[in-house]
Amino acid sequence: MRPILLGALLGLTLLAGAGGLGYWWLGFKAAAIAASTFNVPPDTVAIPSDASAITEGERLAWLHGCHGCHGDSLQGKVFVDEPRVIRLIAPNITQAIRSYDDAEVVRLIRHGVKRNGTAAFAMPSAGFYHLSDADVGRIVAHLRATPVRGDTWPPTEIRLFTKVALVRGEVPTDAGTMDHRAARLGADADTSQVALGRYRASAICSECHGVTLRGQDNAPALVQALGYTLPQFTSLMLDGRARDGRDIGLMGTTARRRFRRLTTREVEGIWNYLRSLPLAAPR
Ligand code: HEC
Ligand code: HEC
Image (cartoon, rainbow, N blue to C red; front, side, top):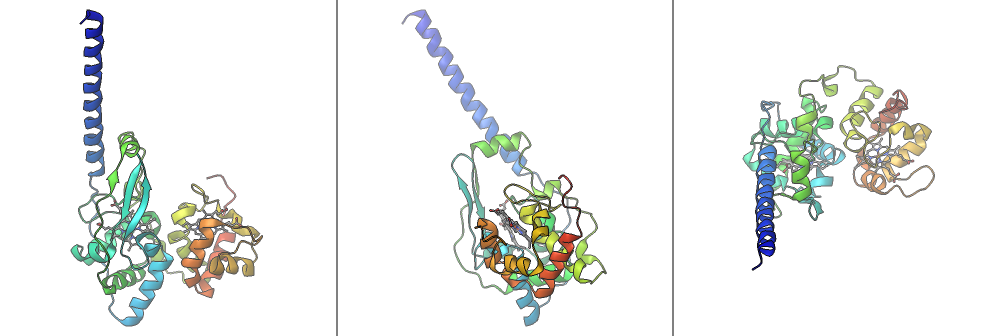
């Protein structure tokens, strides 16, 4: 073989080797980052067991999207499946929580920290943080009362682009970014209708519209709500109808599946609360 060819071959082999090594390093590094733990203690609250608390817990779990992401009977589902990005599983809650004690479930909901201390990807816990002890207790009571059903899912598969993003520090989790000691809205002594609206909006609407409600990804700043009269807003919340009849996609389906469970007082409270916010200010 001519020396120049030999050199090229050798170069290619070295490159492939370096590529393989780089890929291995990326996987190793990404796994280490995903495995980092958070020092948040389990969060003890009283878990009720009476039927009315369990029924209210079911309503709250629907409102806060537990069923939206984990499936109608909490049996789990593939939440995102993008080639080269991630196959993210929202696990089967009915099975998963058998290994959790109550304080660990409350920590997972309010702090986004799993039983083993790692962050739960995609759990909107910065909003759930505001759930009061009574409400989070009712949600856990509902989870505990739901019979074990459905399949066991394979673990989440973190793929190339997410590995790169993890290593670059571009995959924020709520556990990693939220303030785990902030004042909790749900513990507020103010029981007015507006305070109820603020409490619900902060834990529910924040999932998509961002913690400041000034918009995030495809969900606009809730300054949008100011153009709605109360009857129009009620129809948006309970039937998923925009005031101009436009198809509002995810917002419409989310309202019809989840927000139709809001009480009149909650809808009015959210409407009034949104009107009291400086929503037009830049994010
Ligand atoms: C936006 C979607 C979304 C919402 C809303 C959501 N979850 Fe999750 N949840 C996930 C995903 C995705 C995971 C997996 C996270 C991971 O593996 O890192 C998860 C993880 C969990 C786990 C951990 C299971 C385990 O394997 O350790 C439990 C329990 C859970 N969620 C309960 C809830 C409850 C209760 C609610 C409602 C208060 C809720 N989730 C709302 C997406 C969601
Ligand atoms: C699961 C995600 C999700 C949640 C939770 C959510 N929204 Fe939305 N919302 C959206 C998206 C996405 C849009 C943009 C829809 C479009 O224009 O296609 C939107 C649009 C809106 C609009 C503008 C409607 C218009 O006329 O263009 C209002 C008002 C609104 N949401 C209010 C709320 C309120 C109040 C809550 C809490 C009770 C909430 N949303 C919770 C995703 C969500």
